[in-house]
Length: 76
Ligand SMILES: [Zn+2]
Image (cartoon, rainbow, N blue to C red; front, side):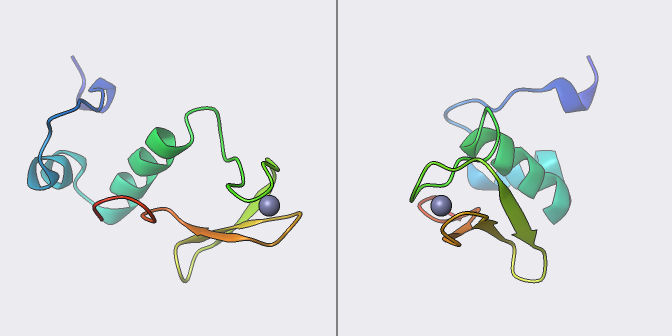
């Protein structure tokens, strides 16, 4: 089974998670998929269109301009 088909499982420790997903970019993509399974939804107004502020790893809602960190509210 290819590595990238491994699903996130409850009980994984952070070091295991980081090790498994290697680079920060890969980790971020996994986190995005976990946080927004069906795509980005603004936590403030539920709008689904956003832009990514790459320099700060933030996602900004195109409607209310609320900025969300991918790691907000998580152990990261
Ligand atoms: Zn919004």
